[in-house]
Length: 358
Image 1 (cartoon, rainbow, N blue to C red):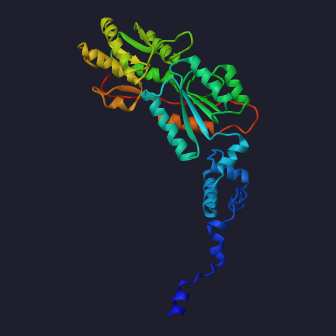
Image 2: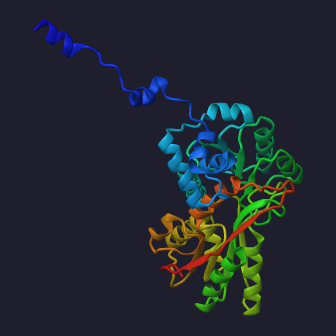
Image 3: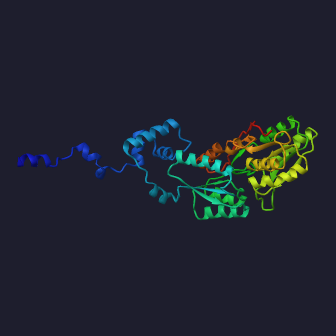
């Protein structure tokens, strides 16, 4: 019995296969090992694992399969020490409290989590100040705090942008007036055309546009394409158009405009300053006894999620904010192979979303 007990508890010698796959003896798998298994270069493996858009989907799938089969785990700490990278994308914005930024940020977050999960996002608020935005751009570059920057604020000065180009740091701007820079934007002239023609076709003879006020430092500059297109189309129809400006893209800003809109007997509003302001205008005007759309037709801009939830539901110009956020991330990782910098512009086509307010 003693012999049998001893036999049942005796440790057996692991087989050769078992020894090779034990964690303590597992070989250190490298990029070169994955490259050999996938039949590609180690550079291709590196790009594929980072989600570089230059790599074909079929090649990326082959590389990922090889990496998984070999149990390859990238040493991100070592890679960052060698290359001086941070695995961080910085987002600079005037504010992160508005719906526009929130929906755009959702696209940024989704693209990073799905395609570049080893990267993190860092948010920097300029608090509505163009000067503060410039300071943030400088600090991020000089302190090497991020591998790329996405700007929802005022674009960087030419000098700061040149410094980013020299350092080969991607900087993507949400502004169609950022000439010479990588930019994401909607076709504002087309969006304004859709909104203005709707108001005019519905019989508006005293329409007005709500834009943001341009201050000396350029803070909250409204895209001029929307304003110029609105006045051009109204003039072509022989309609006298009005304009009011705001400082902040908030619900309360729209409410504050209601009294002057009613006093001047506007019969149509194109709120180029965005949906939240348009919703504020509707609330303020209804409180003064104005019926929407019977007395006042209102068209917003952006098609935020809340726009379909208010009463009456807001007619608006849709921008694919989530898709635009995703594309900004793709531009950050799509650095050109050539030494000479060539700016990239991504323009998104707006759509009229017809609801009840116009």
